[in-house]
Structure formats: C-alpha cells, structure tokens
Amino acid sequence: MKESIIAPSILSSNFGRLTEEVNSVIDAGADWIHFDVMDNHYVPNLTIGPMVCESLRKDGIKDFIDVHLMIEPVDKLAESFIKAGADLISFHPEATSNINKTIEKIKEMGCKVGLAINPETSTDILKDYLMDIDLVLLMSVNPGFGGQKFIIEVLEKIKLVRSMIDACDKEIYLEVDGGINMDTIQSVANAGANVFVAGSAIFGSDNYANTIKHFREKIS
Ligand code: DX5
Ligand code: ZN
Image 1: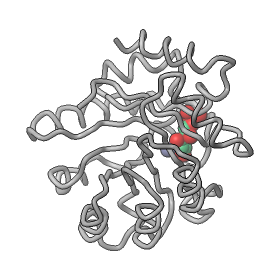
Image 2 (image 1 turned 90 degrees about the vertical axis):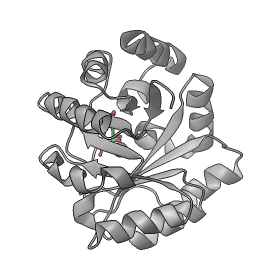
Image 3 (image 1 turned 45 degrees about the vertical axis):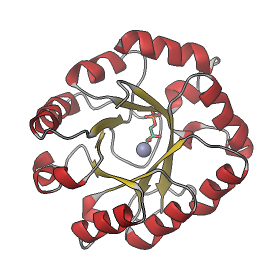
Image 4 (image 1 turned 90 degrees about the horizontal axis):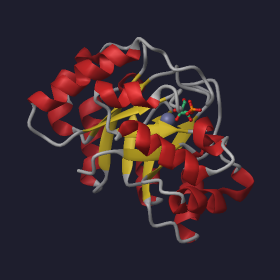
C-alpha cells in the first residue's frame, strides 16, 4: 500500500475541460482521481454520473478513479459506475437497505469498496464491516459541497479509525474528505489518514504541481 495518496476531487475542476483537468492533476503528481457523485436527494446538490466516468476512460485516462457516491439508493448506480471504469466505490451506509449486499455486489464485480462516514455518524458501524472493505472514507465536512471548512472534531475520529484499522491486520485505506488544505493536511496525516482528498485547495490554486508538492512536504 502506497504511504500517502493525494486524490484531487474533480468537483472543483472546470467540467467543461474535464479530461484536460484530470490529465493536469495527474501530471502534477496526483495519485487518484476523486469523483464526487451527488443526486440532489441524499445530498442537496447534483453532479455527474457514470457516463462521465466512461468518457474519461474513452479519453484515455488510465489512472485510479475513486468514486464517492452520495446517492440513495446505491446498488444500481454502483454497478453502472463499475461498468464505466471505476476502481473503487465508496457509499454511505445509511443510503442502502442492505449494507452487506451492497458491499458484496461491488466486490463481486471486481471493484474495491469503501464505506463513507459523515461527521455526525458514529464510527461504531465500521466494526461489523471492516474485514470486508478496502477503504474507510471519513467526511470532514457535511457532504454536498466543495470549499467548506474542515470540522476539527473529526481529527479524533481519524485517530480512532486508525487504531481500529491497525488492530485488524488487513490493508485498509483511511481516506479523509473535506476542507483539506495547506493548513489542515498535516494534522489529518498526523491523526493517521493515508488518502487525502482535496478539491478547492488543488483546483483553486494557480499551480497544481506546486500545491501537490507542498502537500507532500506537509505530510512527509
Ligand atoms: C463534498 C465532497 C468532497 C469535496 C471536497 O461532499 O465529497 O470530495 O469535493 O472539496 P474541498 O476539498 O473543497 O473541501
Ligand atoms: Zn468526496
């Protein structure tokens, strides 16, 4: 498992030039592409679906696509995203009627799976699923929009989940999503995260490569 993964969230990119934006962040040193899917139902915002993921693949993007589903229900669209080329699908457990079934379905199709936990949701739920998943996504803002302020209380949750993961002798990514920038990334890393999602801090910067380089310096 790579030590630190930088995953720019394309939510803050220019969608009119999406392939170019994705290529730019990859050239700038990003590891994964974080793909935020919102349905105006589970969250009060609407973004992009599997066709856009498929288009990126058709445009030659070969990099790891980390799909974050903020939708309800989950199963059908998860399947469409896997067919469209997703490498990992995270979903919010409260958005599906049968968590085990959703996890199994995603894995059966050969895709990695993650569970996404909102700032107000307890991490207790993870105990039952940790052995079955590849990633825990801890939200450090309320899902729905980019550019929000990092919720500082989530740092304790990151530490808690880090100890849960370390106790289970299995490689599981610990991803943190929301409000990550030059001021917050170091404490997120110190708390135990190893996948760092950043939307506005990367796409809102003038030089993606410099921003990613400075991120890596902060977390090394
Ligand atoms: C929020 C999304 C995030 C968002 C992060 O619901 O899940 O991935 O794009 O954006 P920033 O980094 O701007 O907080
Ligand atoms: Zn996200």
